[in-house]
Amino acid sequence: MAAIIRHDGVRSFVLFTVGGVGLALPLDEVLEILRPPALVSIPLGPPGLEGLARRRGAVLPVIGLRRVLGLAGAGQGGADGGAAAARLLIVRHKSQPVGLLVDHVLGLSAVDEDRVVDSGAVPDPSIEADLLAGAVLAGDGRDGALILDPGPLIERQFADLGPAGGPAGAADFNASAPPKTLAVVRQDEEQLVVLTVAGQEFSLPVAAVREVVPVPEAVTRVPRARPHLLGMMTLRDALLPLVGLRELFGLDARKGMDRGKVAVLRTAEGLVGVVVEDVREILRVPRGRIDPVPPLMAREAEFADMDGIARLDGGARLVPVLSAERLFRHGTGDGAGTTGGDARMREGEAAVAMDAEAERAEAFVVFRLAGADYGLPVAAVQEVLRQPDAVTPLPNAPDFVDGVTTLRGAVLPLVALRRLLRLPEGLGSAGERGRVVVIAAGGARAGLRVDGMAGIVRIPVGAIGPAPVVSRAQHRLIRRIGALESAGERRMILLMDPSELLDMDQLADLLATV
Image: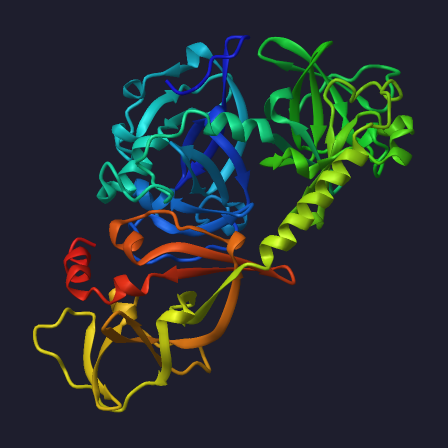
């Protein structure tokens, strides 16, 4: 089984629901838990593919578990709390990150070894046994859950790729992972649990968090204890002291204890429960994005429990990283770090390198189709025309060829790009007028019917990467993706290969399998 057995005889899981069914994934297989970002649809993908998401410069496919598991409804949200409760679980399948869209994340849980059984012991006809790795039995007042096996689930979605979905360098979901890839990622990144206290965000290393449980209804108070020592609770027949971070940090003092979450931490003194309002995300943050506490603040005892400050979302979101060992020992830390100058120097060198990289860019003609942006190299586009008034049908042509028209005395075949990409037929956005993009490669020419034009865009080479391979047809037509960010707005442009668009006979054979 994929779950790793902990030294204390328990296995840690992420618990979530999809269509009202309780499911689990081993914590070691979950890279991050995020709020669902804006998704960009990619054509010619499998039915369970919700779209593409961009995460720290990488583009990953997002699979809707409702669709894949055949549970009630489809898409985000649903009976488990609506779209606001939906979350994206990032897992790594071989060498590629993949997002799994779920209805609601219940939290992290440490499960005793004897509660983890083979999936056959708890039959559930709503989910195929081949997609399960086991089950967590109900007990101790907790609900049971089916342990999902993401490998077969993901491979089934990309089954048409075969043993070699694309050439070297492409995002191939059936290729074996390079032996050192995951190790390199883990060396360069810190996995953090993000929690909220009095409306503010803090974080702790995942390695220090044993599990997350709800605040119990009954908490035993300790007489004459300091305000942040809230009392004790029982956790699997053992006493767990509870510390309120709100009270420890002096944030918005309150009376009594609100219901929230308890993050159970491993410390030198044993297990300690930290009471917070919510635990919402698990993030993988590059170590270069975690800065030491500024020296002016580090001299103060109140900041001795911080290991650093994580800069997220381009610096618009700052999240303190707490030390589980020093969290309850204000004033014992040594304060100022000695690497701040070196870190700033490295950051400055990186910025210079990025500026130099930005000077190298490729130019694309960008057009719109079914609400998404597509691009073609400027060198391959001869011109952009209005839709012709008359089109002559072409007998025995592929279904995506509308017919032919004449352009300055030469015959020009017209390709209905929506039909070629298996997109729903319909009008473009309000105010857009259909256009024909004339492309040429060698002696071949064709006109692509699109919804509207977005103009010519220069994309830095560093912002262009391989597109995830979700089908053979998609990989043939769309091999790269350009990612741009301006004024806080993120934009993904699907970059098409003009030579493949002009090879209509092979395209017709390939699309017959979609």
